[in-house]
Structure formats: C-alpha cells, structure tokens
Image (cartoon, rainbow, N blue to C red):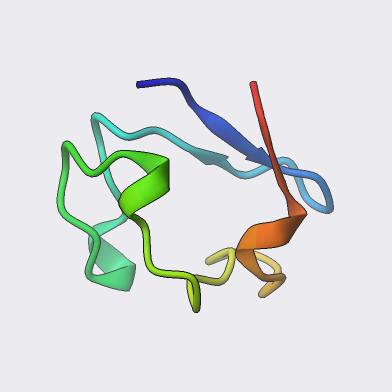
Length: 52
C-alpha cells in the first residue's frame, strides 16, 4: 500500500497509520478511503491527492 500526498498542502496519507481523526483505521488502503474524505490540514477532497 503506497502513500498519497495532498497536492495542495503536502499532507501525507499513510495507509499503515490511517487517519484516526477522520475515522479511518490503520491499515486502510487509499482505494478504501471514503470518497467524501477531505485533507485534515487544508480541507481539499480526495481527488487532490497523488501517489507518492
């Protein structure tokens, strides 16, 4: 599972860590992150992330 980086602010989604503050459990692949996910730092949607 690769990491994904926010194109706007550079925040990194690491599947091993998940995003507990957004209710996403550790071990959640990017493909399984809900489509309504937003960057916890800048608020942009999932379409603004790129594979690292």
